Length: 405
Image (cartoon, rainbow, N blue to C red):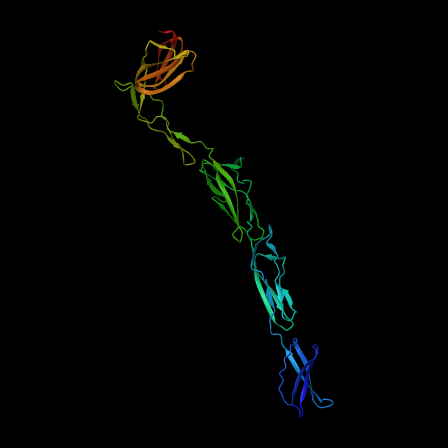
């Protein structure tokens, strides 16, 4: 207010150009708007009235305090990261693109508790970035680094047997013999060697037998498998083969003496029985076999087979050929059973036909040159222990068919 009229008001403060407002009123309320930096700023207001020739002047001061309540802003915060340990190590070196921090004040202190390219141990590690402006406003971003141990332990199987039943090793199979008089072998060997990238305790299990176990006799080798497991369920295996050999021969008791019997009346055979022997073996398992069982029928057969062969078979050459193909039948019978027939003639390999019948008719087909060829037929029956033999001969006459009219 003024007794005459306020002409102008000047606003002046450090760091800003003077601002002039024309008033030309004896009383008014002037709203003043200023844009100031953070902190306290003293603003000078100068008022000049319209007195003539020189206006009267008055001054007042206003202190304006600007506070920064705005937090910094962190952008591009990394996502959680999962990596595996470095080979043969319990750690991993992990890197990432760092986030960006900005603040309205233009000044920000940006820190991280663990920086990129640091070494992390197995497990979860929380990484935190903190942005703080000069006025105590903060922002934070966090993410988790997870280091996994996926590397299996290393196990090496033993290479030698320490028990005194060792025989030899061949083609990676260790051979041992049974304990005397027993069906198994007690086998011991050195423990396996293990290591792990995390230097943790490694659990080792063997199957199906541990060192010092009683391993039975088998027809093939037994694979001993060692499994090593670390604290993170990673596993490795190694294996070796052991076969227990039974070098003790079985024993047969009460073997029957030789036996002679007569044939059954009107028959060429006899039924013979005897008390079977007893067999024992340290393995507890044996297969006692016999080629002919008790109460079997035995025969003494001195009667040869009876063949009926044609004495002469005629034929002509095949069309345009120097040989002729002929077929003929031979009847054969025997008191027991004809086992085989052999066909043999000069210039040809012997041909064998299996018969296994007491009576049959065998059709024989041969390809022969022009002229007469004698063919030998040999028959052997199934008499035991040596078959009886019979022979017949067939003469085959082949004529040149191209000159027959």
